[in-house]
Length: 448
Image (cartoon, rainbow, N blue to C red; front, side, top):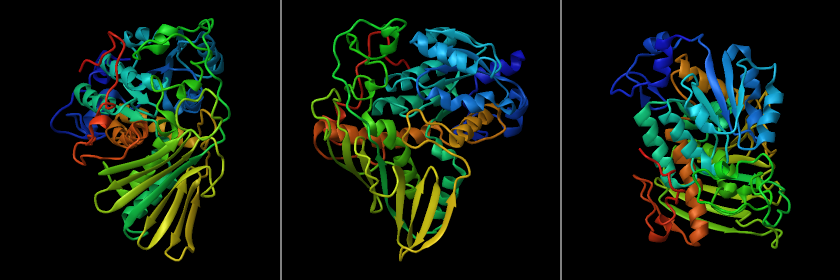
């Protein structure tokens, strides 16, 4: 890799003019960006987090057309990084090094980009620390653990000029792109309402009990930016999602992000002016699940537009005929869209058109993956190289969508509705604003 190219890919300067990448001015023309980076140069990437989501990247990493080397495989649990190492051995180039500590990757100037598939509390801090170390980042949803982290991510991206793609991969679905464009052109008249939904049959969750830290787990590094807690049985392995707010963002952060993003995109809205939520734990009342498992949320926006969220983590009834998706209503018709494609209806409810995806993307299966993720990853690579000029989900957009999930969580936690400043996104409620930020373990506070 040439030194000029490496230096450029590490330090993309933010200028006042030039092309925009994800809404971010680079100061270079598209032609010069492509010339400096080199459309055919190899990208050195690192995998940060080897849990259920990491396998979703395998296809893109194996595809020789993407021209990438996997330089590192990193996870705080030895058996997880060992598994990914075995999965990819001989199938990707790069002679990947298996490491426990992400700092080793941040300190390696050869690494161009990081895939951040860690638990929620690591998403934003892991991303801004990677940017400070000169890396581009593919950050899984939720992009932030709290509203302030979303604001910080946008600020860090502007400061360091890095390419940051959020992993709400339906933005890369050709069928979804097509129908959203048609909605914006008036296919259903004035789009005024969207209902986003998710239904799953998550089972009983163990009650956490004190236990020794499992062999191979770096519990200190797992906690990372979060305030310290003593280890409880299996708390590190996925169920951290439901064991309180220290690490997770509940089902709304975990899954509503996807459908709420499609709803917001279709309606062309930003921040709501009012949020109202009903949420509670409705199933297995004596198990270890600490958060709500059922939520109905209503977001009201300027222009008399509305988004509703119907989230059922432990009741698989397909109220709308699918386990997840979004229904958009307009003055002249409606649309149902999910990861499998879309159906367009006229105002009488008659089907006008449908389009089914030729590929596959997992619905409620843990980890997921499929053609949408592949396209999303390739888009990320191409923008880094300059062969594409626009991210499908730049962090500036992703952070706004993520704010809806934070509003819903905060409303459920303070048990009250509230108004929102539609210009700044700030909550117009003192109790709500107390949950705007979080406490960090000493030494992990963001430094912008």
